Image (cartoon, rainbow, N blue to C red):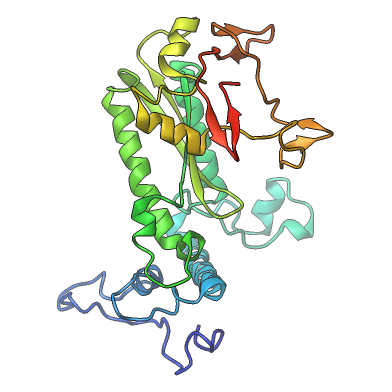
Length: 323
């Protein structure tokens, strides 16, 4: 790394190397765990320390590139270990040309050593298939999921903004802080869901984490409840989902959050250059129609209740109602 990034390491500091001992472990008599792994080394390097400049955190996009290279080096090290320890990880299915021919391999390009990634390697084919089969098994046991919840990361969370000390830095410059805060809040949300106090007693829950193009993580969560939801009614939907602006008198926090994060627009006649505008109309089909009750269309999609109750949110000095 010092040779690759001389601007970050102008004094040629030593990077990771094999054989780094732990400072707080006694290696006498120990057979494993004496030396630091590459991931542990970089996890240590990526942590912020007060009054200590950190080249992996303080230099914007260049630091981000160095972190990506460090992650690639960790993955390469893991893949190298897997390739060199195939005998310990699996039984060889093709041990020679005769065995290969007996299995139907008649093309010379198919001969050679095959490296199989174990299911423990995150992102590998067996890892993905294993999780996919687990999800299908849960669906086979409990049927279609009852709820689908999306949890997004907000770069303005106080836990993130209060952890950025360098002048001029933004949340994308500190992806380590963003992912740690998101991980903590996601697990807190999952604990709230599993407790049964929000949606009732649960049978199973699945979630996956993805990253948006701007680098912020978000999670898709599906779960099954013990109550029967096979025949959803408008009353059941209204008890969990609302598409209306909260009352600022009785729920000021909900009103503030919906006004800041969950109101679409302005677009249409108010702003013909909005990103959602395609061919002169909103590609998200806003504004929606006002209706007094939740209903279903001919395709089974839900049309949420949007009453004309006089509540509005102002964006760019334009009043936006429940539509």
